[in-house]
Image 1 (cartoon, rainbow, N blue to C red):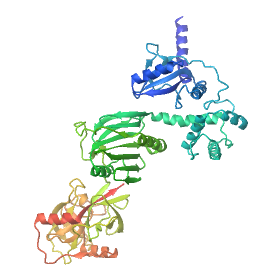
Image 2 (image 1 turned 90 degrees about the vertical axis):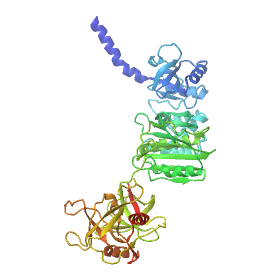
Image 3 (image 1 turned 135 degrees about the vertical axis):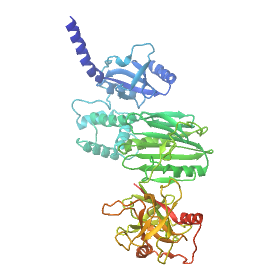
Length: 575
């Protein structure tokens, strides 16, 4: 007897997966609160059988009908849509997202119930009917003729989503709709008749609706930020406040993130936010940007992420949002971004600047919990004319996708020499530097004191560092006359900076450290391109250099530092 019972139990266990796969629901509505969901379920239960309610994984509450078999549910759904008993956006769900049951109250768990047998409805053609054998063109036209206007519009929407239709959603199947249907059929390997069969209509609509179901679009009210907006709630969940942002991080493996932006301010605040957002990793460099007096839009895209940011000024507050997603989800998430923009409704006050204080990871590379974009390489350079032309080292710049000088001014390499290791940068926008280099024209004195101005620590300090040393030799270690040898300790960020004498005249450009041929030199051994080499290089690039006053006297260290600061710039390479 025990063996028989055990066998029966095993057979039941083996049968469970098949039964679970065959049991589906018609999810007809979702509400954000239990009270609203109970009221909705009560209303449906007055006219429909098999009404059930479950809490969803997202925290919302779903009202559903069922369970039914997977074969019968689509036809029933279409029948209920046509009669107006359920909303047009109701859909077939597998119930995998259902959690605790709230309706009917006190009943057994309906999620485990067996499917309800429903009578077939042969006189009610459905978008979801999947016949074993497909229809002939005549049969397809006959079933199509029984579609409601809403169902026809739904087909146009689905065709538009798939990229086959670009005209009005009007439910009228004219030439444009017929052509798009034929294109869809051809793309799917069907005969291009221009009339979709019941099976093809079901495939088209179900694919379209399934994608939107994954978004879990839901209206979210964030009173702390004073923003009401529809979010892809199936892909994100609230994480934390780090003013001026409310963070919604991705759930599961969605790769989606949302920021709600909320702060007090004026037009200057809005424009400052526009600039700051572009320094963040979540706003890639490539993408359309538009800034107006009262609002701005930022888009960004690279190989790993895309984003859309909108912010606007209203009643002394700047509010907006950012949506971030993976490139492979561009089509779906671009739609989500449009839904967010259309539903965006600011109200009330702004985020309290003290909200969430103490929980943020405060490092120089983060701003309100968001990673700041960092350059791949930083070097130094210096102005050589009044138009803002910069002389620097070619080291680390040849493969840059983007180069900036100073405060993020875009620049391009207009001339270079890989043998000398020199490069000329032209700013995209004409600049007016406070000072540009005046070069020493005489022969510098050996063992004289020199100083290198450079951004030793990148942009950490915001100003160049002045490092002192001596001019050890007018030639290289092997007697090369194209370099001067310095006895000075520098850092990689100093490379490309000017080498100055005590009067402030430029007598060279600091080259990358290294002895070549695999030799490792002492830390204090460095090399500089001398004025003779620089003069020839600048002349070949059409740049006339200025000469220093040969009678100039030595400057006090503080004055030399100020003079060097006016001409020396940070050069950044971005990839």
